[in-house]
Amino acid sequence: MSTIIWDVLARVNKWWLDPSEIRFDKHVSVFEQSTIKWNPKVFTISDIVDGVYTLRGPRQVGKTTMLKLLIKELLDSNFSSDSIIYVMCDLLENSEHLLKLLVDIRKRVKGRIVIILDEVTFIKEWQKAVKLYVDQDFLKETTIIACGSHALDLKKGATYLVGRRGYAKHPIDRILLAMSFREYVEMKFPQIKKIETLDDVLSMDSLKREAIIEKLYFLFLQYLETGGFPRLIDEFNKEGSIRKESINDFINYLSRDVIKLGKSDILARALLEAIIKQRCNPTSWNSLAREIGISQPTAREYGELLTNMYIVKMIYHPNRSFTGGDERKNKKLIIRDPALYHIITLWIHNFPEVDMNPKEIILRNLENEQQYIVEMTALENISRNNITYYWKPSKEIDAIIIKNKKAIGIEIKWQEKITKSQIRDTIRTFAKIPLKKEKLIIATKNQFQQNDTVILIPTPLLLALKKI
Image (cartoon, rainbow, N blue to C red; front, side, top):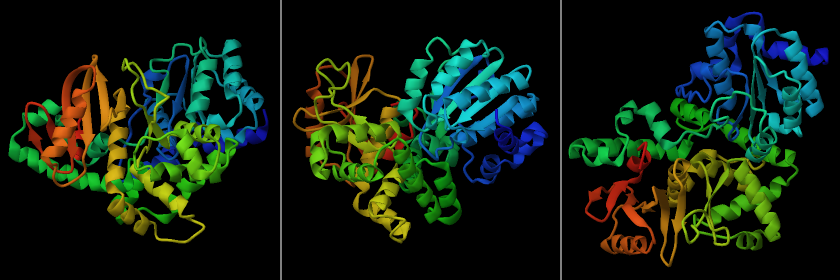
């Protein structure tokens, strides 16, 4: 393998000579200085076995930071410092070079090794290199973590490696998403950890509940500005706003990744604009294609691309048996994080080519589009850990969760006062679902009310629960 590659690796892996150097690593030092020390520990020391893992998630979510913190944890536990190899995969041209590097590492380093392949998805057919490495019986005493920002490529790679994952612990394919609102609140208001379920809320003293509702409303408004990205939250905590440079970086990464995947960033931006214009209403690829003047297959292709980049999520209408989504019907397309909504809006306005104040655009979004941003945020948070559909026989219920063959209905009404007619319409629509019913929830702005047929609960409180 080229000595140039090893020279670069030696500069990046400074802990090879001195384990204490990990403290001065860029990602670790930024984490230590941050006001938001979020480390979800997607990997721990117990995962270091003979096996191959994948880690995927959106850009700038903190994957590299989390992996560097894993390296620090290993070094602190006296793991051999020269046996942890962090590889920036943009150093390598193709899968052949990757295979040569993997074999070279195994031959140079004796005993257990941990190899972290960061942004591996930009090496075409990277999985072939890993497969050949395993097939040559090099996986003994080796842990490989392949990390990337493009879900489809990592999924394909994982499929290609079936039977060659060694003793990797479940789940072998892991995801790191931006902080959910629950995770965000845990960082700012740790007392929320004691409140996990709706029953906890319902059994709570009313004065305590009102105090928590007020606190969560304040935090939710901040979350609607920063989303769940640690870098943006830290900037907001320190400066009261998100820096231009950070938004510029997000846009550049988004544009560059689309281009690297062989697509047009102009078409991707146009589709995102069309999705935002739908205001969370169910739509079709045909409708979006007509909106921006492209073919239906092209609209679908770009929609799936943005989904695999963790920018967009699809919420389907259920099929007749409620066993899956009905792809023939219109689907809801949501932007997966409030900060991404603002960043995409700025991109649509041609920032950074056109100089503007991002804070003004963000505040305008929160003034004019808040109810749609809230609905998208709620759907993203609800659907992370639940099988979720929308339901529209005539009138619509925003989210239907299926648990144990029972339906939980959630209608999002981000407004000061929910009228009796709105409650009545929601109850009637929910009644049309051909399943046993568990409960019906209306997610409000700040109104709390409970009776035998429906629970009205402030959206921030609902999203702060661990389980619905």
